[in-house]
Length: 311
Image 1 (cartoon, rainbow, N blue to C red):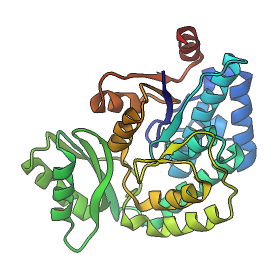
Image 2: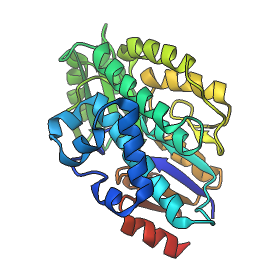
Image 3: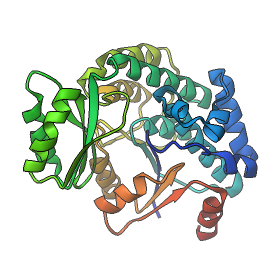
Image 4: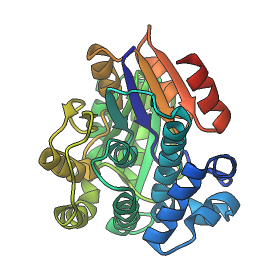
């Protein structure tokens, strides 16, 4: 069996995340403690107790989601003991790419937390609140979503930000252009086209100021070759070179998340078992993209126990 460990992105955060796992696993507790120390804030308390509106802030949500995913990963490693669950590839959705690189030993945990804190702050600051927006287009194929976004853009920015699954795309850009896109997408066959409750227009050209800030930060960051290849968001292809990874993380800020293509490419590379660590958002997408593969979400200790019993 060839496994890929995959890591969720923004939107998977919720108050209470990590609490039960930390109570059950010393390895998980150590992750949360290290992240708190790296950030100089009690992020774990915010994750477990809220308030929800503060956890939703991009600069908190991004490191929180990563910390939860890596806590699950480390708890799984700890419970597996001398015979850890093997994995051949890693991948992550948007910020989940940082979690994937941390799990693969490319970026250490404290550095990953600080990078995501900065990434969240930079993305929020790139566009004044209210000027940007994102929307989900459901029941429309990728090519049609691209055409709808291009037609709506005019002199503004409107582009596909996430190619999540067949019939599931997200657009991003100037708020007026994104709003113009909704009826166009419906005319092109979208079953549903709706604005998303996000604070900034991620993964489009408007994020260029954030990309520049991340380029500076990543240039000063030690990045090692991962122990297994990463399937990168912006290329949907495996990469194992630290220098290339550094560049792709910068490109990712403004680039499209090619998740559908990444899953197909991993399947074509032989992956027949996808394990999502720390969330339950990517497995439903995988089920829409490829058949004849196993996929499961690992969030709580009971999930870890079930996985280890099966392997």
